[in-house]
Length: 467
Image (tube, rainbow, N blue to C red; front, side, top):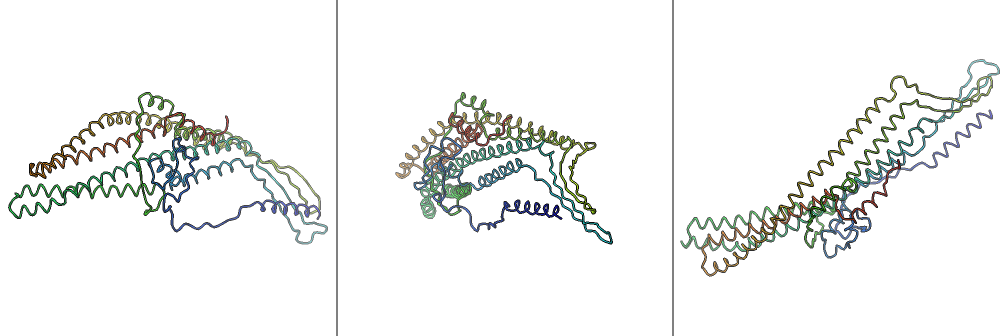
């Protein structure tokens, strides 16, 4: 009985030792309300910003949010980025799990003698075994998980850069829409008294019906445009609030104007040539490809026989004690993991083609946006000059109309033309800003040496295993 008693104590000690380090469940209730009530309630870690120009900018929302502060707040508080950061935590946990050694398996049995068997004792058996075969694939599993962690980290970085771009686009849209609403409100205010004058003139027989219709149509058109632009402003403000992780009623005080991006041909060529070594999504695809290489290597290693080694101690019913070694071996006769190897090879081929397609599409899109930006930059001075000229003409026309030296249709036509030119100018500024932001994002967020240093430092924190 001493043998089985000793083994029983060993089993109990092993179970207690293992259970002492177990995790404990803790409930986490879902929130009743989400989102910050104001930008000042959000902590923004300037040093952790993923783009160089954000790390050198002071975040102080008390005097309003400029374009850079808006982007900083989006990085710190965007709900979708929080989900991606949780995914990064999962990837780190998976890499940790992949590096753990497999646990040994402990087995125990006890039989009881029944019937009349003189001198018989109750036999028992104890054994411990370990899957040695997993040691052969552990290196590949660990490296695959590490490369996957790097891929998730770089995907997060790319999502942060895209969030910065979207914050800048929405900042420009809100600022532009507010300027457009202000211009249309001014126009509607100026034209509002005109309706009374038209009604009085028609009643007195001093204005024909067709001229009255022209005047009333101008008033109605201004109000319709104002209503449509107010709806567009409402959409843009709510989209920006959601991107910033703020509550619907949070104040949205924006200051300054949108930044205009104007790279020259040399900068575009250099940035495009260096893109695979700098842009996070391309680096993430490279990391995913390396992770898949390790998974293929693991699948190839698994075609070899799986081996488990064990040690056992037993006693039969005649009180004879035995000790021995057991070896388990899988015979690779039919399966040989050929199906998984084929799957991993096909997956690697898919990743290869995905990377090539992304490179091709990026080059095409960069070229398209570069041409578009060049055309918009060339057209902008003409649009500005045309709007300024019509505004000056309108000021002279207003003076002439007030002195009864200009008829109503001509005055309304001048107002309509000046308003259209002002709206076209605002829209051209918005389009120019959005095209520049899109081009900057496609080129990796920034093409300066400082931005490359930022990405290099960020990537080194999630570097994959050495070859």
